[in-house]
Length: 141
Image (spheres, one colour):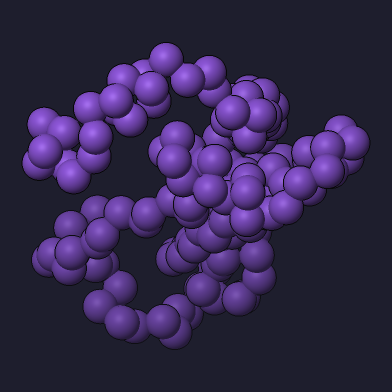
């Protein structure tokens, strides 16, 4: 194996018993801090944000070092979610079309139409539904 790799046997065996360097020891310590910050973020932080977290903890290191440690240990930020792909299908008929596009009505309470929409806010989604009388064009519900 040593002949194939082009190294001496004595160099290989010296490498096996050599203690880890200060940089390797420091990288292992930083890896634990990186993993803690990564888990605390819900696995969403990438190298720049984790680097900033480590700076707030008082660590002095570069952003590229954090990126290298994360890359070597296969720690990656979760990116945005993928929306489900929608395919066009023939629309389902929920109710028969009784108005036949005739929206002028002669007396009240004969035909009502409705629509629904949703509004996003900080707590989730709000749903708004309205019912309109076609004769008076007023919202009745």
